[in-house]
Image 1 (tube, rainbow, N blue to C red):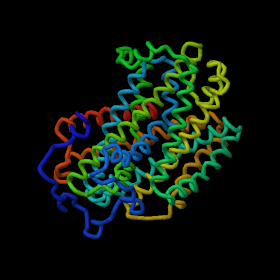
Image 2: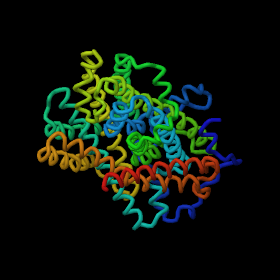
Image 3: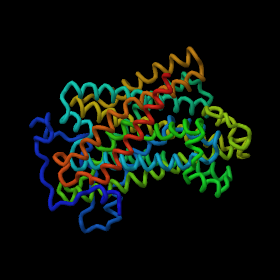
Image 4: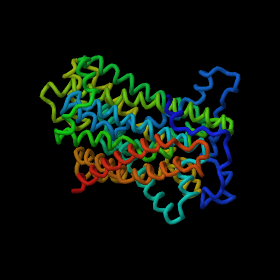
Length: 460
């Protein structure tokens, strides 16, 4: 049974969501679409078209969301896990990916079924004072995410072109104009750019995995659960880090909005089909994220675990040692190119998420370039300050801090999402089933508890 079918409780027809279900919605807000410039801008073939053509029309949002699961902030835990413990933690990457698939499918379902993104849904459900708190938490998460992207891009530019980190951080501000250009061209251009960079990252690591020649039997064994993960305290800590960094809060806001860029029929059957294709799109895209995260860990395990370099944790150290250990001169360059592609991709989707959050919570629209330069400027300031005061090692600590901030914001996104998709008054016939409700809350509680432990360990 497909995931989208499991989440549905079939009823005869879609009844309009009653206004009373959204306590703070006003008539003036009723016709406000998420991302109005791109809303329903991607055409969907008619009912007579093949299933493949109709599915391909929905391909794109899932890949934009998958960017958040392989951004520079995720690389450190994958590198450290592979270097210290070989292939054992592959099962944790698999589990975390399964959790991501569930939560992202729920975000897509919310957007398609209600016509609201998660920020708009919060605005229409919670009182204004609560919404201000949620909005501030979201903005903090966007800045923290941008911080990781600045660091990743700056480190990649330093590794590839020997550009100082300080200069690289400042150069990274120029991607504001890249994001603006792509958005002005059309949403399909933006999706194509993101998918192209994702393909670049995947190709780079495919070459690295082939060069590493990891033992297939050890990889397959790594995907099986191991009791050692629970009994080894160091391994458990890194496992918690991998799962805890799974869901990026802004991804839930992003996904609930961009699925509405498709011009599907706003009817019961049209929404049902859109949910099905959107679920397949995000599931397949997140399997690509699974491959990339697993590949990072596999390369680290093959290159560092058995060669006496188990203490590798910094991206720069991994870059310096990859080529000599793998015996492939281009290995380090491919690693840095993948990092640059991942960082650039994250900035594009982060820009979009920031716009969705600001417009959804505040109904405030500012030019894309101003929004981008503002958030990027706020992210660059701490990178510049830390680089000047503490050097390159300080930047690594700042990257860790950004992940802690993201962990703090996660409950403000996950809990409202599950509140909404389990509410029949809001979702109508598209409310998720009891079985999926139990599974979704179990996933959310696990992620929130693990993030809480990471936060406690970081500040203790």
